[in-house]
Picture 1 (cartoon, one colour):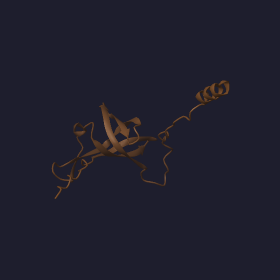
Picture 2 (tube, one colour; picture 1 turned 45 degrees about the vertical axis):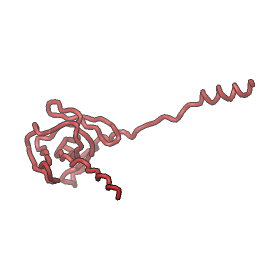
Picture 3 (tube, one colour; picture 1 turned 135 degrees about the vertical axis):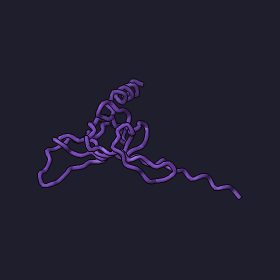
Picture 4 (cartoon, helix red, strand yellow; picture 1 turned 90 degrees about the vertical axis):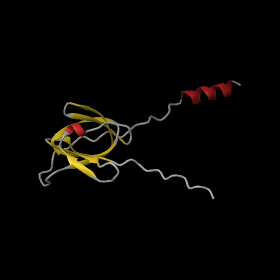
Length: 129
């Protein structure tokens, strides 16, 4: 009985492996050979404050990014899969799936384009014959 208790105590004291997530990479110095350095994120815009947006990526990580003065928002035309471009930042909406393109400017990633993704269409079940 004492041996069984010692085994149970030892098992309960064993440390469980820690779950870690990959850190969001920090920008590196721009390479003069390239015209631009771009990154993309598929996720969701959570919040807009002044000239920054809070983005949640596909793994649930959150990060704020400044909006570039060159930013363009592509909104879907209702009923189609086509998008219209707009420089009006008032068109930025939260809570929708987006593809965001960032540009490395002065060693900082800035939001360059926001493209709203069409909602997934789930096929309706086939009727039984």
